[in-house]
Length: 585
Image 1 (spheres, rainbow, N blue to C red):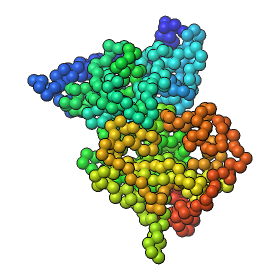
Image 2: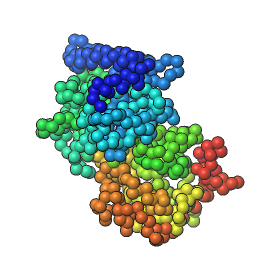
Image 3: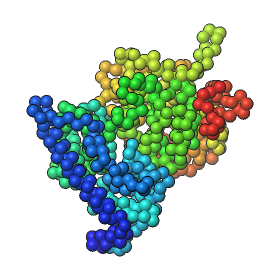
Image 4: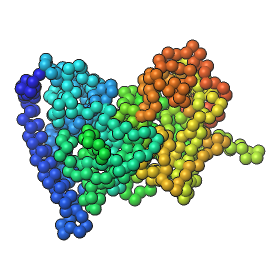
């Protein structure tokens, strides 16, 4: 379809709303031009020695002109807000569209693909979801052969959503794109694919520059200004904010587009879909309010069924705040989070649409937690902290409520300790062939004898500026160190090898950037793989009996003794929200 045909098709299908949307976009373009002028003026006259120093008391350009730059201004008669496609990204298994504001829950969309020759193609979108605090994403199928990746969108049976039109070759591929940017004091932390940096080490930041703009980076000369990088590692580059913003109000950076380039190469800056996000302005704690002592962060995919048990159990141990990074789940995770919040568990689901980006996601989470938490733990929903019974002479003492928080808070005032590590015990299927009805803590009771690896709680304000992490522990700021908790004090029960129907989901993909997917014929001896399994999800005949060297019912006994209802025997996560209580008896 040539451009004339495409315009004709849009005129026919947009009839009623086209003129209004054109006016909207023209109005937005005008205000964007005015804002760009003010931004440039602010840049050139922003130094402390300037005789003119404008002060804009807002947290970002969307707040300088809140009625002009947000689509809420155009709401009328209770109609859905007009949606604008901000960005498109080609992920490995779908096309991701980022929209300008929130879609209604349950709303459905159709993805519109444009071919090089024949008629257009319309397919039902895979899913739609909230993104950040005010945007949305829609997941579309990958474009068919000979169709452009610059797909449009329309409400099912409705009008096409206006978007930034772009040619197929300008839609960034997931292998090379800047995808997130987070404000941190007078710097911005940029997350990018395509840097090709070695894992688990930092690099010379002088190799990189950041570029800032109010519009898309379609041309090299669209950059408004450039700043130096101050740290770099893995998929993270930290850069200074522009001088004018550093000298005034750093929160003005929110909403500005940013990208990264290498200094030593002639290649252009990476394509970018990232706008600066300010975690401080979206936190749960008010200015001056005390931080939570203990928080937890995890990343998951389609594990809603076990989230209640994980949150309710660890809440009793003292976790006060939950950051749940949802990596493209489609199993009703938001409904479970809503139910947990109705029980006062303080859960935030953060949509993380980026695949194979767990380390960067945890860096992102650490920055969010920095403003709300003294300590944050990074561990998975199949991992449960267990504090064994303490034997003091002839007395046996059970762990009490908030005992995990008390354990970690012992180090809050330490001048040197910034990470508390706990060893893991890996449990097997324990003879089961179906998921245990009472939860993993009660159902799986046989494990491997030797402990494996560790998980940690960290002080998010004492991490190295690179935010370098190996999934579950971070590089610390110079002068700080780690302490290891004795197994007799605390250990993690890692329900790693569950019944086959649950375990085989690991073959679909691994979320870590640097862990090979199990379908790939690489690193077969790695500890990240299950011993004895190949590259296909084929259940071994003796799977239910594997990884069973020691019968360990310590946590099971504790859970049944502490949490089971005296009348029904039900555990809190077995009951509905109308009857469950977050407190154990």
